[in-house]
Amino acid sequence: MYEDKTLVCKECGSEFVFTAGEQEFYAERGFENEPQRCKACRDARKNSKREREMFTAVCAGCGKEARVPFKPREDRPVYCSECFAKMNDR
Image (cartoon, rainbow, N blue to C red; front, side, top):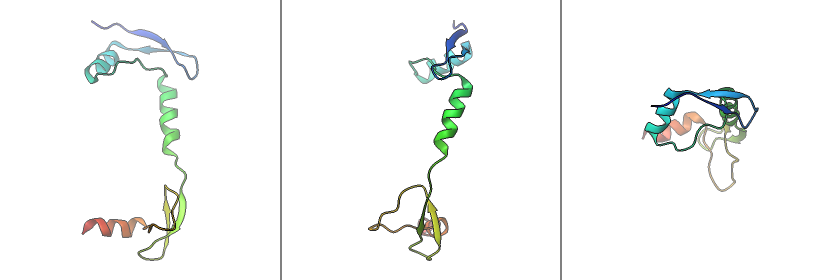
């Protein structure tokens, strides 16, 4: 039913194969668009999103330094991971 297709990566311009198995997987999931990037470029893009900027704040619970993935605001308390976990265990 499906046949391997050769596509061109929009990121690096190299050719890559969109296999019959991958096409079937896309169809089962209802994906309508073919992949636009090769595996190497998809992986690089995914990994770049994981590297988030971290901010330093003082924990409102224990007073220790906390590293958080958002810019702390003066009007909202920030908790370190230990204090945050304790609050969620209640």
